[in-house]
Every structure is written in structure tokens, then in C-alpha cells.
Length: 137
Image (tube, rainbow, N blue to C red):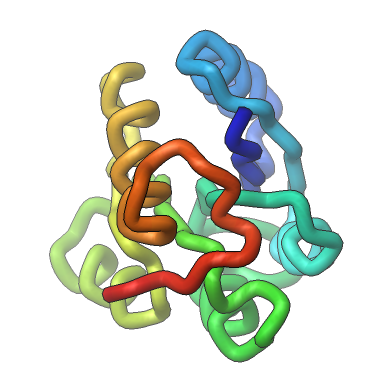
């Protein structure tokens, strides 16, 4: 079962997204700050990261950049999930290293689709353990 690291600081969104992802067949680990997200990602056993931009300690852009600079985490695909829907914000998220950008509010089915697409891009085969594979962009 693929493992999603959900980096989100709003408890209600954490509950909702965790429920949706479990229903879609994913295991979920959570982080409520940007710094915690980096630490959890570095611990391994994460196949894809669903990352909010507005996080305490480190914002999502800084988290994404830190993950891309680290050999232990650079292969993990990042999907940004944010209320910031302006074109410049989306562009900034993708420039920071995200493979896709979901705007809030979102359709529940969109989460599963985006996570599967990120895993496919990372592993070249979809639902597999992305932990040792490289991200091809």
C-alpha cells in the first residue's frame, strides 16, 4: 500500500484528507509543520507527499526546496494542495519541485487521481514503492 505523507496544519482538513486517502487505498502519515514534514520524509517509507503551502515553521515552498536538495528525499514526488490558486502561486509551487498542484476546495476523487499520477511519474509503473526510484520530470 503506497504511503502518503500529508503535510497540513488544519485539523479538519487532515481528518478529511486522511479519510479520503484511506478510502482510495493509501496509508497516511501526517505532519503539521513544515519542519516536521521534512523530518518525516527523511525517515523514509514515504512514497508521495501531499503538501500544503501555508505551514508553520517552514512554508511549503521551503519544504519542497529542502526535499529536492536532499539525496534522501529528492526522489519523492510532491503534490501541492493549497487554497492559493493564482497562476503565479501554482507556477511557484511547480518551480520549487512539485509534480502537480491541487487547489482547495478540491473534489475528493481528484486527490486519488493526483496521487496515483505522481506515483506513476516517479516509478514509471504506478502503485509501487517509490522509495528507491527516481523522479523523471
